[in-house]
Picture 1 (cartoon, one colour):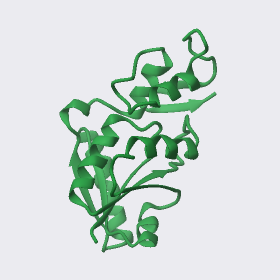
Picture 2: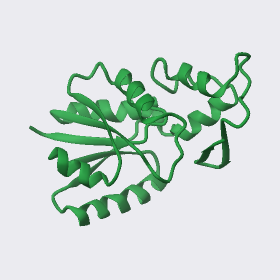
Picture 3: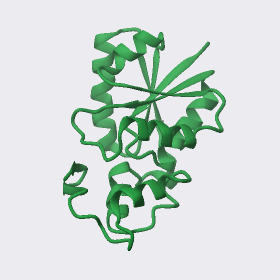
Length: 180
């Protein structure tokens, strides 16, 4: 059976993530969509919440299993006996980082391959950080995320009147989030 891992922090899952997972599921017999804990990020949602949101978002894909992990991705791949990692690329900046990660994974396990899938142009601007920024200020993200995720963001970031909650999430700069 041909299997692949689609890892990300999914904080939160976006339509861009789902697009990559759907396309990977058309190529592979089994896809593991894995919520990874990234020590460089301070997530807005717990691992359990992210797993729940992702499970709902990809529930229509029979060959996709949602899981969670921490530690090295290559160790997870070894434990699950999966030889392919699928990563979505939005821009050249993604490529530089993902290329470095692919080389490191290859160094750690020469049998592991990384496959890059270009993000659909409809989602090329989309990131979890951008979605959180828009939601944080009360912008509508319904068209950017799977059903229900927009409500999860509103519940976490906004008060009953749609105003940003003080100290819940602040941006120190592009892509640099912290909980308050």
